[in-house]
Length: 307
Image (cartoon, rainbow, N blue to C red):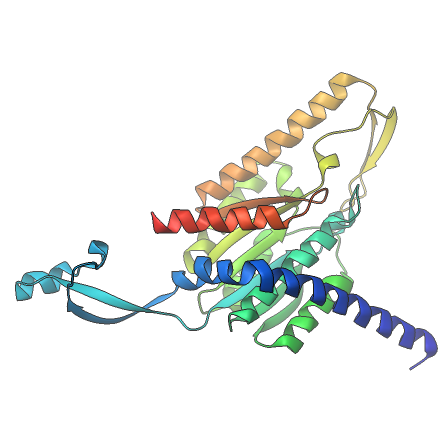
């Protein structure tokens, strides 16, 4: 190993270790118990039927056995001891954009790290799919700290070959390689879905199909400059995935308001598509800490489950 290679390796280890320290603290202090209550309780195995006793949930009554015996009986379930989490993360070129302290990809990497540590903290397996316009990396689900550190290393330093985005292909791949039901976090800026109605409809259909097999959570990683233009005069913007450029006069209030209206309309369409597919949808932004949004999402999901 050359001196340059050694320095690069040390830098990689230093950054991975820094992410581990930060995300493990968040998990241990805040998220591990919420992850358990929100996701572990969703996987239940049938155990037995027994007679009803006061205090049992009436929703668990087995009416067939009750009718046959003449006495109320309830179904008893045991919690699945092990779940599988699958992180399906967009590594396309648009993720490199960030108008503040971090890029969308850096936010996605830290979120993926937090979720991965939450999984292993609860003795679950976690796997990773990184995709652009093709699936570029697949790490099968496994347990353990060394496995999660490998995932973090790939999240931080993986160099994608492609620049575009194909979420449908990524989800199709996930459905082929993951037989057992998995908690699947799809993390993307969803920029590719903001083009035409047909693209959004195709995404909605694939989300619905995937959600039948898995428990899908779609996480949109946003940057505020994708919704609001600053008033700084003439500006050339470039699509990081296609290279297409456009010149905008941001001093014109009509240009700024038209851009904002279009962007917010696209995002509203994405929310509707996720809701129609039965998929939970969480939005995070590079200009603020994500932890509060993530905790709020867990609370909302837990309240919905216990209704």
